[in-house]
Image 1 (cartoon, one colour):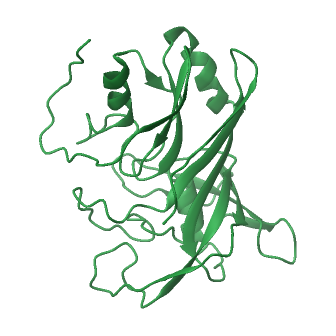
Image 2: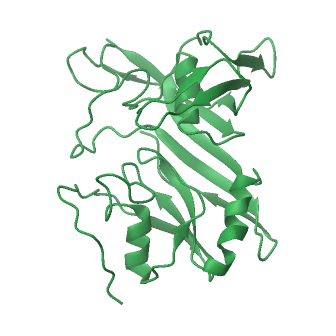
Length: 259
């Protein structure tokens, strides 16, 4: 079956494969690469995970059970059986999915956020810690931001392995890390307990640890949509849940590396 799509001008081709981690009669689980949007939005239509899947399988009824940011890579669950769509979407709405992310961010002491709380979970060690705040995302505004108020975003942050890298970046380079003469990075493991827009990026930035390659936090950098050389170093590493149809435990792990 030939899929029909609207015509989109100047839509750069994302040169990365959309890998299939698992499929059955109800779901398809993919390893979404960086730069590929989950669903059509703005200038992106055919270069999205949803349209690629519908074209590959010839199934126009495929729909995502949740979404990842375009710049975030990793595990995404799609539902192919419309009769089961609500069952899988409710897993995410009811917070019954265990999600683990990994990122690269500066290896340095944290700074005190302007609002919200930090709870050390193994004092006196700084990590692991629980970061809680109230995040707001306004329509038409690129950045989400934190304000005083009732907590609606919670993330547990752990240290990953001790591998560090050093990157030189001058203030005129135009990269998301411009302004640093040398930055040492390390891995962090992130456990989001809620799912607010840009939550992990906002929480890491609020600690003075902006994720490597982030073009929104701490400052907005005008993107070059044809440049795929500096991906945001944030990966939805794993996802686990009890399948609402077969009732068996399922775990899926991304193979996309942090670089």
